[in-house]
Length: 497
Image (cartoon, rainbow, N blue to C red; front, side, top):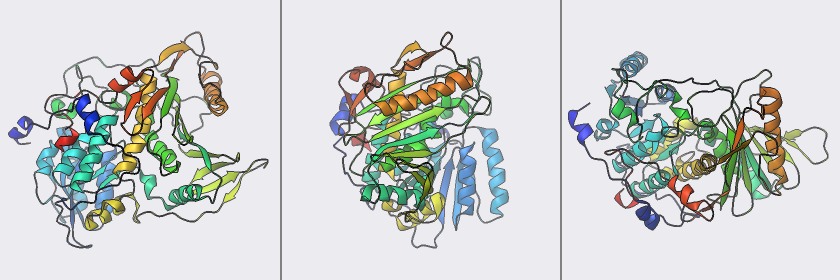
């Protein structure tokens, strides 16, 4: 890392007033396919030079994916933890077998300064995703960014505008966007081939455990703590932040709803009619049960959002392990005629009055071939943002859906743990699905009313055009649209990208 890099000033953070004045109506907005990307890809067979930022966990999958892609060079490996960086460099060198040499750096800005670099692949903690995406677009580099693309609503909008201005390829790490089977179902739902969609339901029910409590202390000597936390305003280091448990703190993560759940949220939103952008209402109820640890995000949640056309997204997070735990990481589709579609890529449909589901035959949908890794490389070689499977707008709309649900939960109030805790008015579907979740937590996990409480979030109203809250709770909810940032690591204003 060059000494001057940490002193290099990043663009300043937008004020809320400036953000509102520069955010335009987005319904039906198009990605600008500009020609300002500096990637020097001349033809389909030319080498793509890519940097990988964030080398733990998902970063290892990025390295593996790019190593298998045709004629791709991992030019930079980036991580603020020296021990992790050295270990991954050794693994890359062994796999490369002399085909290329990878440079290890702690600061992503050093890689972006390389004019011969074509793209950056972002697998850092969530609080870094948008800032690196925006800075890379400004440098004319294409971006493959892990889910969620944004840590909050406002920075996601800036990433959208950066893509529009610089015309780079931005592809979201939601791999199901590369699945022609999923694409085909959604095309069938929207074309009239199937009855109209009423509710798109996503599940992120995978067993996890508590993280305990770690006392504040000194960061390990091999971790550049200032670079690791970057934009995140954190009072003091503790060992639950690094390398993985940052997911369960609001300053750095978004809980499982916008972690693993981003995949299923994105699929659910993908099924909503194409002329819909953001929901107009969202709410959530849940809690962090049984674990008694220092994590902040819920391990149990039922949430819902309604779009202007009346279609809805439901979502279920359930992480607490117990005997006979049923893992559910998939999507369901509830149709207006009473049919229910289940599956992923290959589907079954349970029709009204039927005793069992039947196979559902649908044509494959349109995606850029090659899976999530090679589709991105194809888009980079063509310098064509429209080829991205999960482009910047898809990413923004899906992430905002999760942010609004999380924000409702964060603004909630505690009520006794009971089946009557949910406040869904006359929405019988929401009541039914919440009761299923409650029954599992009460009868399966063993959570009791005497020692647990639900956090019930308010129903937040949201204006899709201005991307701000209106009505009751607007003041509190609008404060959550943009996280504070540390000096030197601010998200730029839309006007500054």
